[in-house]
Amino acid sequence: MRLSRMRNVMAWTLVVLLLIVVVLLGIRIAGLSALPELEPWHRLVPQELEVSELDASDWQAYLAVEAALFERLQRELIEPVTVSGKAPYSRYASNSPVYPGNLPHDWNRSFILQPQGPARGVVVLLHGLTDSPYSLRHIARHLSEQGLLAVVPRMPGHGTVPAALTDAHWEQWLAATRLAVREARRQVPDEPLYLLGYSNGGALALRYSLAALEDEQLAMPQRLVLISPMIGVTSYARYAGLAALPALLPAFAKSAWMNVLPEFNPFKYNSFPVHAARQTYELTHEVQSAFDAAEADGRLSRLPPVLAFQSLADSTVSTPAVVRHLFERLPANGSELVIFDINRSQAASSLLRADMSGLLETLLPPAQRDYDLTVVGVAQGGGRQVEARRIAAGEREALVTPLNVEYPSQLFSLSHVALPFPTDDPLYGSEPTSAEFYGVALGTLAPRGEHGVLVVGLDSLQRMTSNPFYAYLRERIDEDL
Image 1 (cartoon, rainbow, N blue to C red):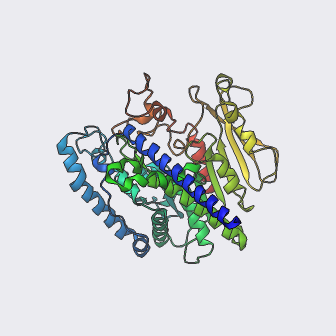
Image 2 (cartoon, one colour; image 1 turned 90 degrees about the horizontal axis):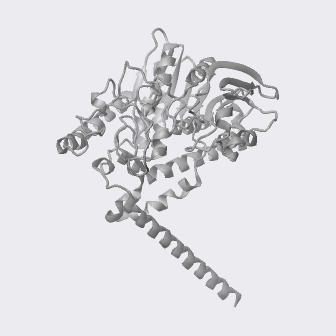
Image 3 (cartoon, helix red, strand yellow; image 1 turned 90 degrees about the vertical axis):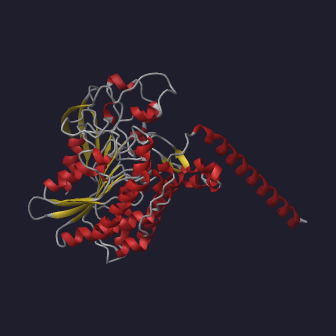
């Protein structure tokens, strides 16, 4: 009798779960009408190298495959789109102002920057999800001027069409990281090796280094530099794959996408597929599993020091995860976390949400830590002058350094995407240089009007896209590398 009841309970539980899934899928399908129709760049999926092929390739072979990808896009996508005249302001029309082929340089492709003289070291720079090598060009150029060879690979699925991310996997990105490190070591075999990762690239840099702890064939970097590292993402990403289930039926192809937007950015996708969200979760989970394994067998003590830069306000990755799932797990090896605080000046503080205003103290209460901590924010007096408050590992007292710069009055925080871009960046900068122009100056847009008029939400255009404290970030990287 008891066994029969248990079976009945399990059966009803299964029925309820199935009903919940059906209802959620129904809601998902009903919401698809709000998404625009898919364009050719949401459907064409270029063929990238698989993991085994990447591991068997060298840099020149990868560049050849990359060139073939762009030739196919030109032939099968860009030429028909241009002739149709339906996308006059798209990166996929050759007569458009934002078409990469018409711009001063196409930064969607992998590149290497050589130093002027003999290289004193080599750095591999890994860009973020939906991004391209453009996002790290300023740092790469600066480091090459400082004597480092800079290797910047394009991650598979990036720099081409958003649909490429419906098929790309994090294992391919990690294999591309291994390929770039092999090339770095081939060109500079004996000098120091560094890894610098932005966003998703930060997770890749960590996963590679954790793998190098157990695989002697992988070159171990001497230092990791992480910018807005993707250590933790929202819980939705874990179940993102379920949202794409209706896409198995052609009539519901739009369900494979979280966002379907016009592609007016020449070096970053605006549209975002569900599959990509799932890959971010899998990669961050893989990093934590690798941490667990390295900690269990004592290898974690050999992990290289980490210098990380993180905006306290970050809607893309979890700032608490950077603190708790990365820095609180690191050995006492000279690592440092730099937090860019929100604007606590008198003019802005009254508008701050209570949970954001108290987040720094919640995350980083006064305590001795195994890593250095620096907070970049307004001085205690309540004005807009910015200072760096640095607390060394094992200490409680801060060393305060004025930065001789003010927190911009109209800015209440930095953002996930702002950190690697100086304010004079021609695409994302708030004060773009006139020396270059890339078809649009996204950092200067300040639209005002009614909701529902623009093809993108006002919130996306109001997000800070460059870093007024970039000089400090660059200075700290120079100290480490």
